[in-house]
Image (cartoon, rainbow, N blue to C red; front, side, top):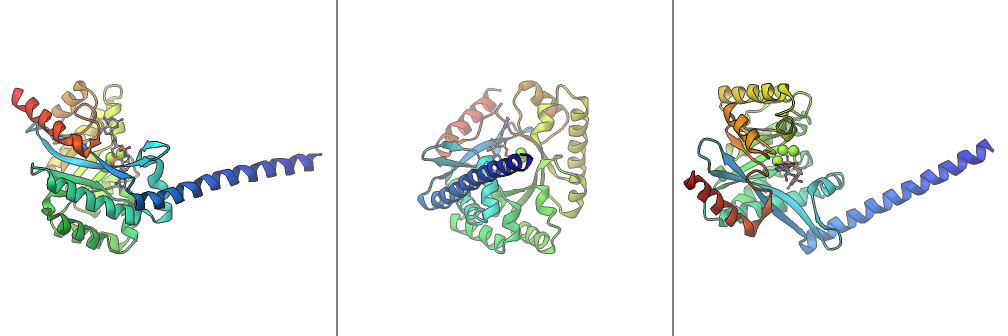
Length: 280
Ligand code: C2E
Ligand code: MG
Ligand code: MG
Ligand code: MG
């Protein structure tokens, strides 16, 4: 009897695996198709300078307009793209699209693009960035690349060399989600970042946990000593903004100013921000 039960459990597990693998396979096929049929889109979220009160840049955030499932967030499909390597051509598309779209915006605004560690494992990241810039005729100083410490976790000389070559082009490099990994501080020694983006979990807990404020204060002071810009992600309330300003961060980003919006709406967001600044 025990043996039968065991076998039944095993069969059940096997069936579950099947369903799981089938849905992953379906997602993979959908993703490959989506790149061909143009179902991806970039949304943009403004980044506001605290001293000027102006929108200094936009972060490009990938969306998948799935024909049946609607608008999908990158957390739902980027991991699969990374596992299958599809992130390489997709990331290339993101770079080209972000550079072209921002070059067409009237203001001399900059754009931040998120890169996956997988794009650094594959050859050609530097030429991919160079091509995107030249195709769009975008000044390299207007492109910022956001990487997480998982890129430096690759511990590869090639990766470091690629980062330095990108920086030599005049592109800025920022460390995203600062504080969520294991040794964020040691990575600041491995590469001269232009910007630190403090993960939004620290901003979310700002009012309830004293240590968050202390950490943010320390990062702001570290940034100012090292000449690195410091941006807070996920700013949602006026009171968070007030604290972040007091602690001396250089930029803020979050729903308080605007959620990520489609390209066609960014003009309105920029106009509104300008009006708000001149009214203040
Ligand atoms: P991230 O780079 O840290 O981007 C910030 C995320 O926080 C975005 O989520 C944004 O919509 C969200 N956010 C912004 N302001 C607020 C706020 O005030 N409150 C809250 N709760 N959330 C806020 P999103 O767009 O879903 O992107 C998630 C992650 O997916 C990104 O995190 C980034 O790591 C990745 N990602 C996005 N676009 C790309 C891309 O083109 N390539 C790659 N490789 N990864 C991407
Ligand atoms: Mg980012
Ligand atoms: Mg982030
Ligand atoms: Mg994040």
